[in-house]
Amino acid sequence: MPVVSKANGLLAEFAIFPVEPDNQANLVEKAIQNIESVLKQNTGFVSGTVLRSRDGLRVTSYAQWANQDSYVATQPFTDFAVPDVHLFEIFAEEPETSELHLSSGMDGLINFGIFKMKQPENQARFIELFCEALVMVSGQPGLISTHAHRSLDGWRCINFGHWRSLEEYTAMDTNRPFSPLFGEMLDLANNEYQKTLHEVVFTT
Image (cartoon, rainbow, N blue to C red; front, side):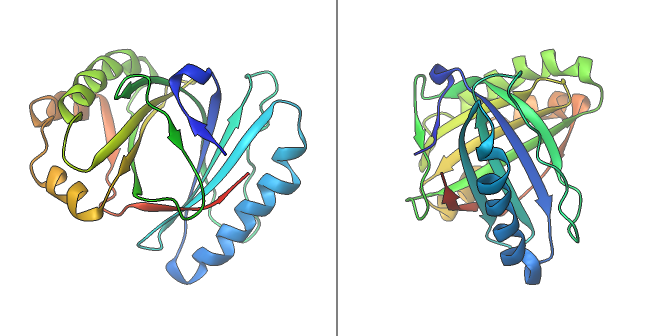
């Protein structure tokens, strides 16, 4: 079972694919096949997870690797849009020392807060603000855990949040506790805002 935790010291690839709802199921199968037939065959591969968004517009492959030297990047799939692919490390989590155990059909839903730096040198300051925001969000009703990832190339930060329900996530999102910081965060990065949440459909 994949475990998302800062303590395990693993790196993780996010490969985020946009897709039309009618084609989401086909893309899920492609992502699973890529993990099983390509990524899993490499030394250093630790785990793979595929998630689908409930609105049908995204498929995300989350692959954990032992180190950067063994990492093999996900390549585009024929007949599907090119994914956004980066290698990440976890830099913060709430609650501290929390572990997110991923499995198909698991309780709760996943939210990805995706931030694309306007310049890679913005990432260091963005992370400072992100850590402050995580403390503000911690303890919100329905939030089980949250793990903040930064891409090693400096271009991305993604929050991997585990929520008990869509209703509780929506309540937080309607009255964001981190609003005082959000203006400066958006000066540094573009937020790929997604109201939808995600379901885990495959792990290995």
